[in-house]
Length: 382
Ligand SMILES: Nc1ncnc2c1ncn2[C@@H]1O[C@H](COP(=O)(O)OP(=O)(O)O)[C@@H](O)[C@H]1O
Ligand SMILES: [Mg+2]
Image (tube, rainbow, N blue to C red; front, top):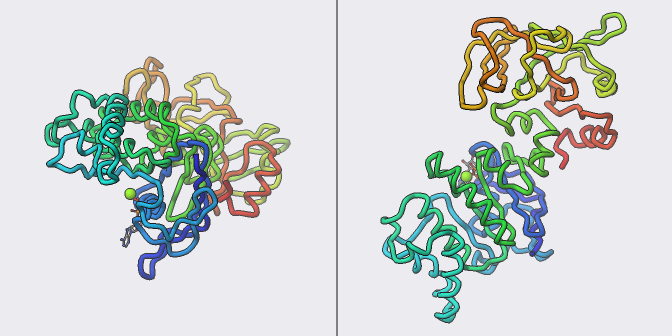
């Protein structure tokens, strides 16, 4: 597969710069997902790769060759848009074969290609229907099929599932995951939905305000977010953030905030060894809190449980620790009383720590390399 590289990619609309020098490398039939909140510049990045937007500065390389001067049709890319953009007067087969017919490919080759792709996407029974006679999910598959028949080396997807209802989205997500096992091509997929990103990606690229915050395998980003933004963006319910001061009392160091005081263990102290600020932000995943009435106060939070949201096997508790909101995710059969102050313990190694002034993570272990990178790059290391 060709290697795609973005080097200092910058986009300005008039005087406003909305992408601030994005650098990224994708290779080896990788499924790369650009994820971030609405307006962070995901679609613009994709459209620049496709050739639908000009590049203000920087360059896009495919296999080492700069391509930003090439027309979209000369880039060997196929794009699937959010709104499908199907031709309403053509049936499914003709929608899917449109590009091949334009290229005047032999009829036999076109038929074989349509059969293959329709079979893969479960569209064989619908080849003679018009888009208006299809469900949203089927239309979505036709849009995908139209891109796949083109046999390009790279596929670009811009929020292809966002027009579908929740159930269909889940179903199509699984189908996409199946499709990518069969199609060994580069895929660049844009979404604002972190669950789509986590479930589909080989590599997630988290964007915010026209910058890349972090990139890596989903698990790596989930476990070791480099900053508070990534930590809060990936994971549902989202990570809890509690503000604390670092206080020494006798032989011990405590992280003390509104309604709690956690005693640091030796690894946490080592983690804080180079940290000179007295204030800290703690990040706690809702699933890392365990209901434990007998927990020691120095390793637990006392939470007032306000609401329990039952979602089946799991429930989400919406609680307060002092005046700070905290969410807990636990098994629904856990005996919880609403309105009461209950104790939830946690393992200190699960705790995420952030510098509250620059929001960068304080690495989990004494990871000298990570510390160096955070210091030299302000946390935006990849
Ligand atoms: N043609 C345009 N002219 C001016 N501003 C634009 C244009 N297209 C996008 N933008 C702005 O660029 C920013 C990023 O947009 P976009 O890439 O569509 O974000 P995303 O896809 O992440 O939601 C937004 O603030 C948007 O308003
Ligand atoms: Mg977009």
